Length: 301
Image 1: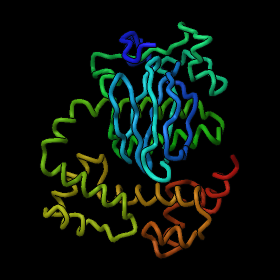
Image 2 (image 1 turned 180 degrees about the horizontal axis):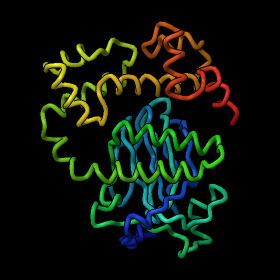
Image 3 (image 1 turned 135 degrees about the vertical axis):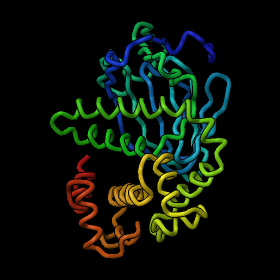
């Protein structure tokens, strides 16, 4: 078996109207430290690291993926994933194809069984002249709106309300566009001193959402005026500072509600809302249901 087989992924030049992604699997996962079996896929996978760190060996290279990054695993390419943080790492995994071309019934339909190989089953990667192919890069740092859309895909796929297939398709198209758009702006991100400071500041907000992150304090961190900070922040993150802070807090609140048994009051306080009534109003406005109902729904499956 050749780990650097250039035949995969199979690329297909296609206009955007032909892109029709289908979701085969979308879940949060927690995996213990250690290496997983070497494998390849019939479909494609976005594997986003929520917490901890991982590594993937693919095409003769070993890639380390930190929290906040994702790896693009192409169809037909051998790879081996490994959790390198102790005692585990938490992931968001999405399996998909670009053209709704695979009939996936179980997890076994996504992972290649080399003893009964089906060469015609490998999914094709959509390629457009407007963007470099997604497979031309391996590691991505998706912007927050992209991460939020991936989280919504997991929720839609898990709870499967009426029309979830259409919702997943629309969300996945947006995710693919967001990832494709990171290519031309990568150089700017790496060379702009303000962007480097913004990356560091956003990481601090992600790590300590309960701190006071007012517009004034954020501007002081960057040593810029509040107006200039707001413009830079919106250009880089796609939203104003206050909206970014709120989205980080909401994402952390949802995680705590899913993964812990602490009280609703403690969840609110832990993400920066010591007033339970204010936290409850904010959560319901953003999620459409109460925090209590969200916790109940998240434990149905």
